[in-house]
Amino acid sequence: MTSHWQEISAELEKIRTKNLYRQCKVSSGIDFCSNDYLGLAKSGLLKEKMKENLSQDTLGSTAARLIKGHRQSMEDWERKFSEFVGAGASLSLANGYVANMGLIDTIADSRTAVFTDRLNHASILDGIRISGAIKKYYDHLDLDHLEEQVSKWDRDPASPGKRKKIIVSETLFSMDGDKPDIRRLVEIKKKYDCVLILDEAHSFGVFGKEGRGMCFEDLSREEMDSIEYRVYTLGKSLGLEGGIIATTELGREHLVNRMRPFIFSTAPMPMIFTTASDSLDLIRDMEKEREHLLRIASILRDGLAREGFSVSSTVSQIVPILMDTEEEALYYSAELRKIGFDVIAIRPPTVPTPRLRVSLNALLTEKEVLRLIEALVVVRRAKR
Ligand SMILES: Cc1ncc(COP(=O)(O)O)c(C=O)c1O
Image 1 (cartoon, rainbow, N blue to C red):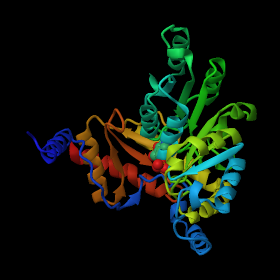
Image 2: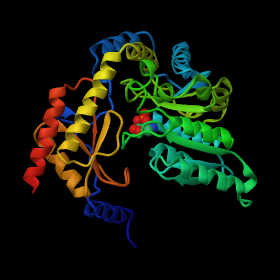
Image 3: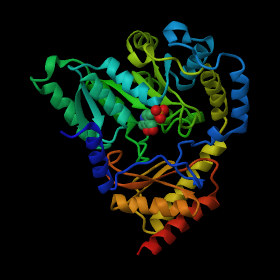
Image 4: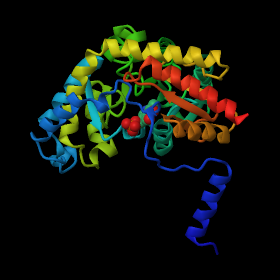
């Protein structure tokens, strides 16, 4: 009989053979891969604020929110965030992964149909899996396909008990940098009486008035109010770590009573919440940084296209360069690293097509972006 460790070694060997082996590497070179879109994780000002905040409270929260982990500062942060994104209430979690996963697990069950974009983040797909809901994929950004699926479900007499229907989508896709027609998502949600979850992880801080997210870019107030849940992370533009779900008072009350990762896990460190509040104050005023970020993204996109690289149909600071094979993606990433550029290869199962996911941040200069394009050309030439 094979031992557990033999089985594991064989599995790892299979992963290696397919060029899908993963390793943690200490980052080095110019940052073209983090999600620190506004550069706030590196902000001296925010670090100083965090030191001050650290001295105001215990280090760890010492327990779950419902035991002794709750603080007034947490409530203040949630209220402030709710106001910023125009929601009735919000609930903070340890990270965005847990926010998505726990939210879907809480509101869906085995009689719920969840309609998900095929390329939604793993935390969304895992939430569907854990909840036991019926997963219905629609093709990436194809909302005709979504509508077809939803109406088919409604017409199908075998649909179990015609319980809840949930639609879930990212508002800016993390690995492709493209976005759905959010207004149409709201229309479909209303027409077929579905619950809508939008994941604003990558658009928050970059898009919308004062960085409030993609919903603020595309929707009216009334449309926004019809969305039941919006999920955000503190780990990207806010420069910290954590997740937060914006919903209604009732939605929050329900999550507090039912959401397992909220109930059964130690609350995040209090200073995270107070510093998130400081980070939000900075984000509001970073209009110049947002403009710069989107400008260098367009320079990168145009430059790559001019040089004949295959760039996906991105509209944002995330610019994926599609590769033919996993091996090719790894080659580019390793060669770029040798000459001082931190660019990461993203491979299946994270994405269906291997790629270099270039993500820009507001601290990068136009010159550095042009240097990256040149470096990619040099690496390609050396490969031939
Ligand atoms: C779209 C999306 N949602 C949620 C998450 C999870 O957020 P966090 O990193 O805070 O766990 C990610 C992480 O990259 C993401 O890309």
